[in-house]
Image 1 (cartoon, rainbow, N blue to C red):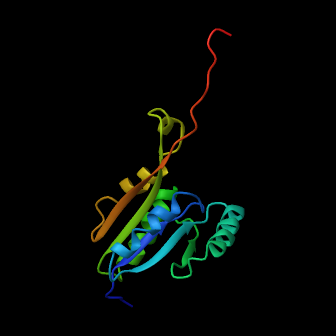
Image 2 (image 1 turned 120 degrees about the vertical axis):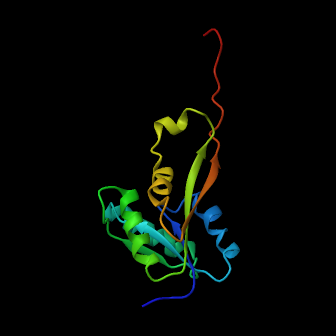
Image 3 (image 1 turned 180 degrees about the vertical axis):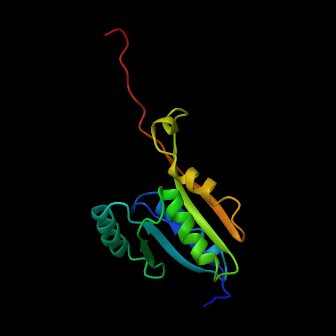
Length: 146
């Protein structure tokens, strides 16, 4: 079955400060169906996410929880998007990503959002939007000489 409306997919790992800026882009995609997508790599985390999603009260944005279908999270997202693009004219995938305040912090944290974006690059009729959400950590106080 095909649907002639575009689809907007917001990737959701957890209900945290990355979600709302990503969701706020959805009204810009006029005429698109919208949904949130979570890949269930950890059953307990997925359960918490589903509960938190209901508590958030975004009834207009259904949460779709999918089992992993690849070796990596990025590969699983790609397979879901490949399945969906068969029945849609185009898909916009919104990838929330923490923009950490220091240059070295991305080296310590997984670049999952960027890995997903790279995995989706080149798919026909798929656009990926990475939404950086600034996370400033409190300044560290140091004492001199002691």
